[in-house]
Image (cartoon, helix red, strand yellow):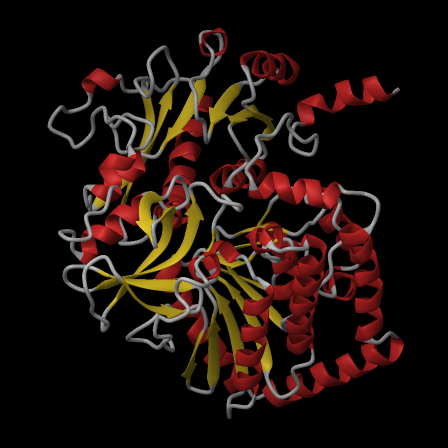
Length: 567
């Protein structure tokens, strides 16, 4: 079928649906919902059999939904309505929630229901739920709805037939007053729910050191105590704030009115104010953990769940030290686990934007990531595995490919390209790694396509070596079992020997230092050259400037028009 995505942005859920539906053989094109005229033009150009709206912030124009079946993906249970459904579910402590696919009509979220899938809620941030449980349920529900539409004989359920005793119903937009924290009364659990309900967008407005911030990235503290509302400690990027029955770590802030009104680590924004707070080292029982290590039967597992997968210069250096420590252990394999939401998305663009010189910080950041990639590539006494629980993008994909093996959870999405960030050339030794693992032809396809890649396609391209068909908790358990089995095989020592011989042979042909030098020469032009494309694209990304048009890589219905205009 010809399917048109009408979406506010090409977010993680939209990308996953794009991958899944294309894998099923559908011709999928994407149009950003900029205005009615643009949407109408896209419909006229693509002539879709079906329109799907994975992520919208406004109603579909009547001129479209009256003439085409438009299926809206709503992150709520059957009968639920409103613009902040998932926020309310977290705030209200719902134990089960869901995703419903309904047909657009003249009333918001009131159309006939084509499919609905429920899931168990986790106690975590909205963004994490959205990228995991919501996305998995959405894939299941959308595929079911598409199959029902194709069959041609399915009658969707009218909203008025939904059992009135269910938890659904109209809920208004969650406002800051609904999330406001009363530090003198709210328990730790209540504070966490409020911050997590707004994590991602819009955050929870609060006051710290007589300045107003939006709070994000909240985690419970089990040991420290203090006067409710008062900051009592710092750890890495986070500030610990006491509640009436415990304390909460707040990792990231966005200042309401300030020089940098975008998310940054809390201790970065409040460096002077928190300088005198006690600084603690994170462990399993206390603190804010960005990096930790564990061992299981001869296998070291290195976890680094960096917020939103962004890896700043300091984080790369800390992870490099942790990796070097792991390499000194009496183990045979090291598994780089990343985090549950992201493995890595490469450079920390927000920190770069906030630096006194964005070019200089970009240069520091890319060199720090390159140092880490080189350390992985040059690991001699261990086999290395990158285990992708969550998505990876840009330099994060190639950092993973630096490992001897890459294992990915089914459902993970890779964006192995830099060009959407102002034609950035990229580094992380990709000019060595991609041809080696994927071949020259596939390497060109990977960096030029600018499209998201699913796990199965990534395996076919040798970006990953193994697809693990397990949910989050099951994936981690499977990785442990597979890694311990790998090091027990009789051929393990021979494989380690072959790996090192291959690396020495590659080094003799062309040293790693040469690859890095050539890549960074291109990057230096991106950072310091006359073309400002990278700096403009980074600014637009960090400040979330709305797209003025849909990239042709996504809007393939506009290719013919674009070619005609050029010719």
